[in-house]
Length: 436
Image 1 (cartoon, rainbow, N blue to C red):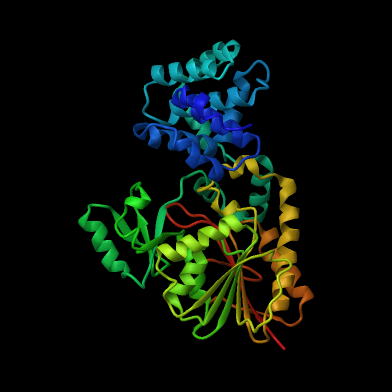
Image 2 (tube, rainbow, N blue to C red):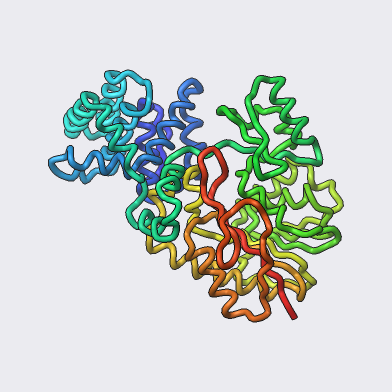
């Protein structure tokens, strides 16, 4: 289903949102589509477009569960289904007047070519509008996840529900990592304060700054000058786990889009850094971030390598491998709510197998005495603790290096960070040393 710019231009805002939601239902990624869609929305409507899109996705499964009893039969129409959920979200969670929400949503159904179903949508929205408090309570009680994921998380983290499910329903905070090569965190906080932009220092990351109100990133002070990167606080903790890397050779496997690559160069005097990734276009983002942050002038020799991490072979001594492995991304579902629709239960085993292949190949490239830091943005134990249990059982020359930090939940191997309200996303870290 291709984007049709000329047709999209004639749609009202709800029809545009519904078109994007329909693409996502068919398996396309929000991150690949959002900028293109927003560029075709009037400036004054962009914030609302963004909210309606992300929040409808965030509440998708709860909206679906609340809607099913209201339907006499299945709509069997993904586009109208998206419009209906969008309409209910507006009624319950926004300050848009009910009459405007309903009329604009019903008009969207007609514009999208499904006029025969506009009466059904109108009737359901009016029914919801007459009992908003009851529907709001129903949605607030729902976990908002696909049933397979709900079951896996409940099994893995029985002591951390329902707070974990509540956290996953919320939007994630906007967090910056301050580039110490350019400015200190205190100096940047003062700069924000002078512009009346509310922010605070992060609790665990000593270079993290959390913004307390929505901001347009390129308009923040120092963006073009490389004062900061946008990076979740828990993702920033990676560098706290590493020894002094001066005059060492480091491989950042699966490096794109470059958050950890750039952080390494900012903090350490590394002799050589090899950033590898299987996506050429995403590797270009690593290059762009290195350039914006003005890190190419540093003493580190940086090489960007387009290659498959399951096959890549080195010809030199490697002291550290940073492996931010492909995963289900269940730990960052707050930032990427389309994961609720895109990820399937059957994907997990396939992802585990890919991780295993990458780990096994990367382990062969690591020098004796060197370290491998295994990272995922998942909260599923199968990709994290259990993956490491399997690795250690098969590699007698691997020794876990315990992570002595105040943050994270101690696992048999490694530490797990869970998404937390007003704090960072779900990340897993395990540091391993290669023995003789």
